[in-house]
Image 1 (cartoon, rainbow, N blue to C red):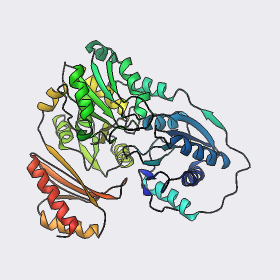
Image 2 (image 1 turned 60 degrees about the vertical axis):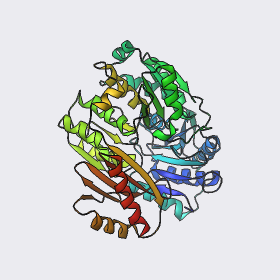
Image 3 (image 1 turned 135 degrees about the vertical axis):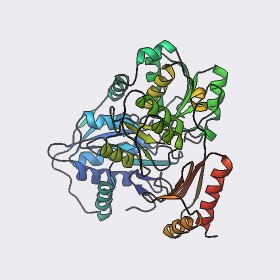
Image 4 (image 1 turned 90 degrees about the horizontal axis):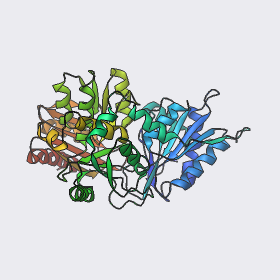
Length: 451
């Protein structure tokens, strides 16, 4: 049943109409319903982002769940973190979110949420895939599922963010920020303007309409944010914010129009929390050293987990982290929920800027500087052999094999790992200079090519 679908703890992703069809969606939805529902918890929260295939796939999932006797709480088009919070609010058995996150427009996907509001861990995901692959016939349940709608999920989400002890809404309002906002026509358009307006910001928006017709590559990396950078410069905005299509990641542009990189979103969020509460921090293996530097400044223990929100969330729970996330612009705060959350990230960044009259550029310039270089290569061959060769070539590094291979030194690192969302190998390196980071990536590519 898997075909060429990408399956991981990040969900099930494929090209719409070929890998991912309504029939495939229905099959996975029914299997998920069988996996997580109990006599006490019979409801599944169903949500989607703004992609054009979303309504068809949501209808297929809803019909499959109803036929299996599973109740459906239909959240409609809402951000991924909003849906995760809705699972907790309704004490549901789980959630299905139809979103391919940062993938290009031709993709869509299913993300699966457990009853705790977290994405499935490896063991639960493997059990779901086993049920799907077994393709066992199941009679329709004698009791058809009941559908209800949740029309206040976004309002509850915003209220929860603004009630956080780390966010002083009055102080932010007093600063009167102008924020240039780019939602890439994703689902962030239904929540981010509301949040910023409630925080007293003047919003200068581009592509806020949530119609799924992405006008650019949707991932909020600096190369894709030229339009936002221009809007910041022309409007005189204090900061630019770009969110990804499902509203769980955010990237920043400074007042001069320079996109500073997604890792700074997490670094700023960590600083905003650690200035008010001590405790451990958890990040993934591909997160910038700018976060290590913030944790070190406050004497906080920093732990690294494999890439993937679920991996970071479970590690945060295990060590009792006060804040964490991923360097792709995803901030996670246990006081709210253990999920990446762009509205949360925006509120924490504005709080940090309002506290002491700071600016984005001032915060960046006041910290050690690094350059991150990211590259992709086709997946193929024996990756274990590649890892072994890299360890020999780059001797003397500290090794981490939780997720591919991470080689690290005090001021630089290289991470080589197979992607969980695309059929590629990712290479990410960081060093004090671009030349040094590019050299590490080049070494990784040489190893992958077998030269």
